[in-house]
Amino acid sequence: MERCWAATETNGREGPSAAAAAQARRVAAEQVAHRLALEVDRLRADGVTGQAAIARALTERGVPTPRGGAAWTYATVARVLVWAGT
Image (cartoon, rainbow, N blue to C red; front, side):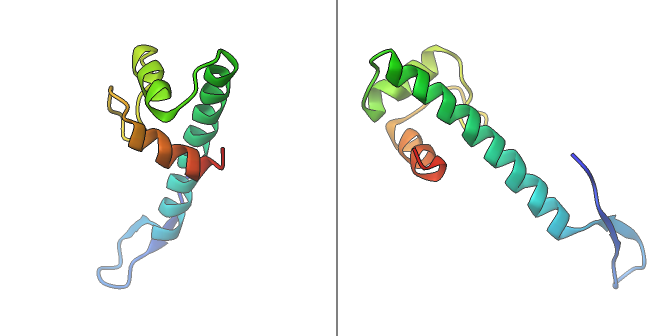
């Protein structure tokens, strides 16, 4: 992840640019969503359908949730699928 630094007007010190930080978060989120979409595609190919079944399978496989949690819910699966466009 590349950092961008910009001078702040309030104290003259340099710090990370808010725009660069937002871009880095966006890129990281897209990468996570892509990996999750691939995992969901594999599950569907194995016959796992439905958001609750996908949530159970992701939890059993130890795939972390987008916020780093261990247990998936059908609502989290639904949000990820909508966001990833799957």
